[in-house]
Image (cartoon, rainbow, N blue to C red; front, side):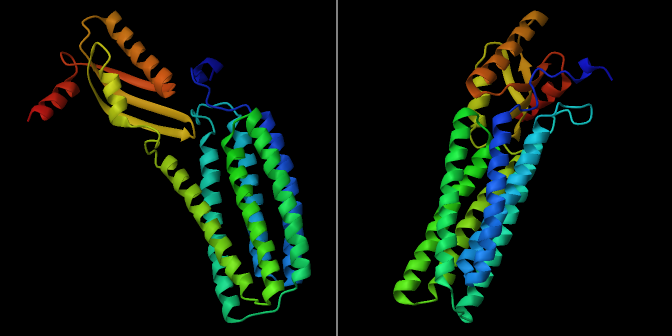
Length: 312
């Protein structure tokens, strides 16, 4: 098949070298600290520290999926994958959200067990590891913020929100250590773990829910389709718009298809009207990938049936 047959007026891929480098740096630092924190949690017998290490592990998994998604997102569409591989970003986000929710439920279960069967905690090791974790999360947050200023990428944005959550988790572990040292009340450790698990659960649910809407090809939240269709119908030469579909392949990559009933008497006028609709959708709504089917009441049987049903 010739190259021309793969041509698309909208490029179904992304070119973001800076985001790749940022994710690699973040991945390596996160993986190293995850191992350190897990070992520290075992030595200190701290569930709060262990829960935070599993949260960091979820970040490692999320970053791995994001890097795979970014790699495939740069590949050109093919005769089989005509939208390219952009949807992999959403699949990665959905799997990441599910992983976060599973991990949070496990932490919650372990915290309840620890409240019933209390165990002593080595607060010295715990505070050292938690302080290192706080420093690491601050560094990673700065790296990701700088990357986003240079190049916008949904995977980097997702990682940034993860590490902002990790910052709060690290602070929570340190607070637990201080309170245990002051009060001697060991129950603070599982209580902090429960709070951390709920934060992770909320984040995982939000990520999975947003990804699910994209996978189900729901209308993106930013659009009011009644207003959008009204804007399309306001263009001179359009009688009606129906068979309307609006969805996204990945974030900020929208597609629209619709049947447009025209009253324009000539073929040239019909193409001008459709061209005006396309310009409206691109300039006002940033919808660049549109497929519009022209219909005329005097020709198209489908449109006649549609109007008869409206009148009845």
